[in-house]
Length: 401
Ligand SMILES: Cc1cc2nc3c(=O)[nH]c(=O)nc-3n(C[C@H](O)[C@H](O)[C@H](O)COP(=O)(O)O)c2cc1C
Image (cartoon, rainbow, N blue to C red; front, side, top):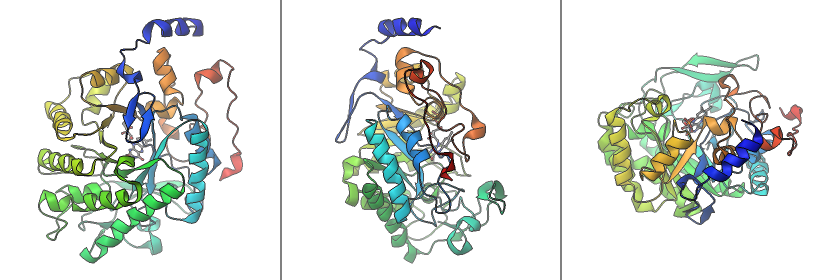
């Protein structure tokens, strides 16, 4: 389609009824539309020290037209790191590095939340302080591989190791790691934080029965398994107030070897309990993502889970996973969600809201450049304005590493 056709089509197709483009009030923020950028690990923090830099600032600023950017997962401590080259939010240098990012996003008119992360057992001694064992609710080795940096400075996959079960005396220290991360995120100029309770990392390891065999106050009943998440939410709220805090969950996901005996009870309880905190939002990874993406009929259990979360959550619900423009609009219309987050489409289309508005073609994403490397596959996905010659191509010092 020629650009003039796209622009003409735009006038016809952008109907005011489309929910995707309607403003939304999120806590203290007025979002111009409902298209959020999902958190995306890109493993491009500067080394040594896992420090964000100008390249990362450029990448995020390019995507500032998102209603909200949720940053890539960011470890709250050295113990919380599980992959090579992911950024942290525990050192002074990292806070200063993130400041470059948040200032660039704000200059470009965007809003960004920092996703606070502790990986638990999804790590390896060579990523841990003093080569110690990764920590977990119970000493159960996950199946799968850790992504580390080898002696040649290259990424390499190595098998997970059995983690060390946390002692109950250590639990306040874990909560404290999130407190420090939240406070540092504020110092770095973020607009809020998202607690990463999804995708098989520490908080989900505690929540789900397959990874948690504890018999103390943090194991057994669903209330006990959800205790650490609630303590983390409370401590983060101390820093940010409830309206600038979101939580991400991934009900029914098996990613990172997670399993639960009764996910409906577990996630129903957690979603309901989170209402007590008046959070900015609950964010779920869509259990029906694969079916949605393939255009097949979703597993009824997945849709029942979406309904259960929707019924349990009395505040703003954000959903990510498998959406395109039309399915996002359909889910908003059906009241299944209030905001839709896009991962891979935002990764490859810095101006995704504009492309959606115009029904313009999307750049395809390149999985070979998801993790690690430099500008290639990171800041060089073109915007429509660049393609039209109306916007300069970004120029980032390639010596950033
Ligand atoms: C390269 C990549 C990195 C991701 N990193 C994170 C992350 O740091 N934190 C997180 O919660 N989810 C992460 N996800 C999951 C996405 O946020 C999102 O849920 C997923 O991509 C599905 O949405 P999509 O179908 O729109 O891509 C990642 C996904 C991809 C593809």
